[in-house]
Image 1 (cartoon, rainbow, N blue to C red):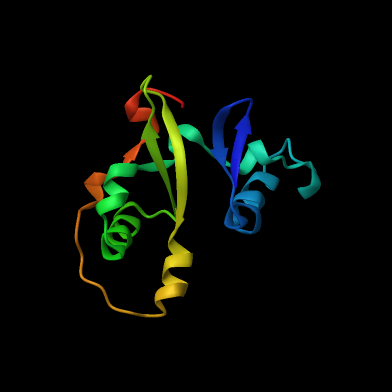
Image 2: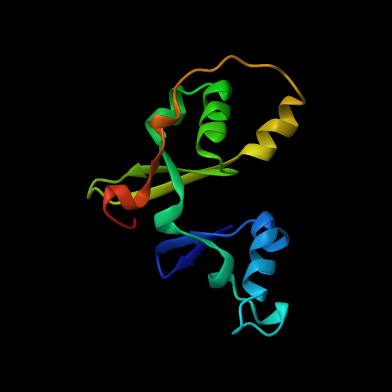
Length: 128
């Protein structure tokens, strides 16, 4: 789920973020008292840390390309963005590694484009 403030995406939170190791690590900190005290902002992946793919890349990518990127970067989700007429990044979609893997059910694919096709938003100078 995208986390939005106003009209800007500020992060992403997934079921893995909620059920995985992040809440437990946060709860171990001295300032945390209970799991109920942990906020979305505490465990979400911030916009600057979200791996993104440009919409034009996704339009020509094969599933094997996406799986190679997932493996190379070590993430579970890729945010798909496109630049609008002012140059601001607009979110076009979200690709889930686990959903692709479930739908393929073990089909073997050949690698395609490299993980260098992926970028982190903070390398591109900011938020959408």
